Length: 376
Length: 249
Ligand SMILES: Nc1ncnc2c1ncn2[C@@H]1O[C@H](COP(=O)(O)OP(=O)(O)OP(=O)(O)O)[C@@H](O)[C@H]1O
Ligand SMILES: [Mg+2]
Image 1 (spheres, rainbow over the protein chains, first blue to last red):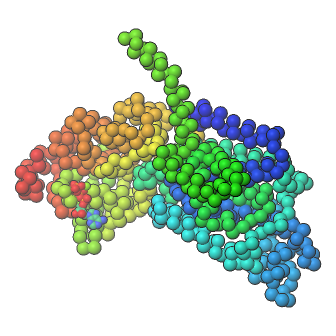
Image 2 (image 1 turned 45 degrees about the vertical axis):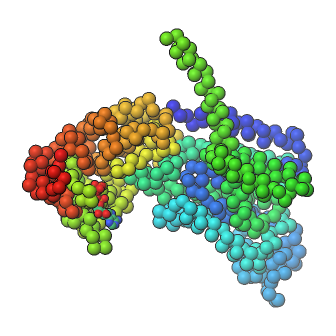
Image 3 (image 1 turned 60 degrees about the horizontal axis):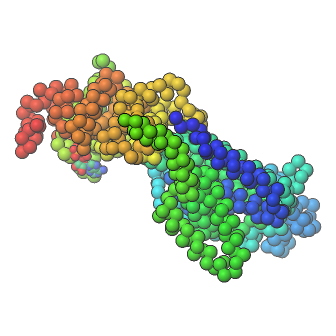
């Protein structure tokens, strides 16, 4: 009988939760700020594993959803920033809009630059928060319905997602008066919950990110353990077979694609809260590819594995970048690691852990069988 | 027994001038096992493609229990009660045998209906029964990808059983099987008879004699003859169609 959390899985999740919740006991705020960013990447890794590992959809544009989440939150936090109150208007107006405005344009979000009215709802940080999660999910769902509805699969999905993220990057960098183009959104204010300002360099903010990650991991793990999760894996193995069993395969693919996008959006939103900027670099192809490497190394077949993969690689990268001579070599190292993993460890680190655990678990059984054999 | 489960009315497909299936009409009674016979390229697989929605027909209609399902999308036709086994066996290789059967219990196919953890006891019992029937109880927790060819075929048959398809299309279910495996497959298929309506493509005449009541012979996309085994084996047109192959042996 396969149970929801077969024995050691539960322990793995619990151990991970305890470790990240305990980190504030040993580290200072600067270090915790850095780790909080890695936890956001960890969430992103889990999102990649959900589509890649469970649905067999290799999304090479996951950065798009992270980016939307990041920009939505950054827009809200930009309007909360002191830099938005220095334009001499009653209501906040981002500083860069003033620099980009036509002479004589009224200093108001309604019409200071073309499209600046899009910013109006973001004066509420909660709008930023909701848009950060819902917009990627809705966008992904519609995208999924169109792509999967056409029975497009495999590498073609990767190409389409890749093209979309690059297209979006082009639009974002081009819309300078609306997005501050290449410079991204900086000088952000802080998110406020129940009167507490989330100072990026504080233990409270770290804990918010850590708890969010734990909740997301637990819910995602439960989601893939439902019947729907099994059916999703079935569509990965043979979409035709699933179709002829009466399942609307594109509906399943789109649903989980949307969930993954929502998680990526949430990760992007949290990242902005701790990193205090949003930039078009989130929409670069190399970032989306990097996420895939995290998931591959951690193990795309495991939500937790991909998450840990992301965190470990980033910790390693931070270590390496402290050594001047290794900085240049990092890309080479990570590329090499990726190739090794793909060839020798297709299930990643979590696959390795799984094999070890099942060896350990079956060892006693084996010996009793051997005993019986010895009797005969 | 006399209600019609599957009815084809002048079904045809035109592949830019080539009519692989050319005006096929037939009625299969509820609980009947009908064998579809025909030389290579006669249009047997294409006929199944047309019934199950894989290929869109250009003429004619398909009725399942009186309901018109012509050219509907595949999962809609499946929901109307048509199950299908392909010529090349197809199961979910990354899932265990048990999970394969769980997924095949597709009574409620919607995404949200399936956001629950496990099957109810009744479904669980049916699953165990099916495992027993296809002889894979010991392999229940095995990944389907590592099963033998025969076991894979049986698993797929089990999936059709548990899917509760009222009309089952089987395309060469014994292809590539050993004599022992073929016998077991005949046994499984005979147990399906009565409860399910079956349309089976098969070349192996010994096997056909084992399972068939009525046979429909296809030739160049058209129905050549229809009748019981003895009638078909002695039918002059059928003999002529198989000429050079020394009849159907
Ligand atoms: N999509 C298609 N486009 C063009 N021709 C096709 C298509 N599908 C099938 N055909 C042709 O239709 C004819 C019937 O093929 P079909 O696969 O139905 O034969 P069959 O009776 O199943 O033969 P076999 O015993 O070899 O499986 C063949 O000549 C085949 O080449
Ligand atoms: Mg065929």
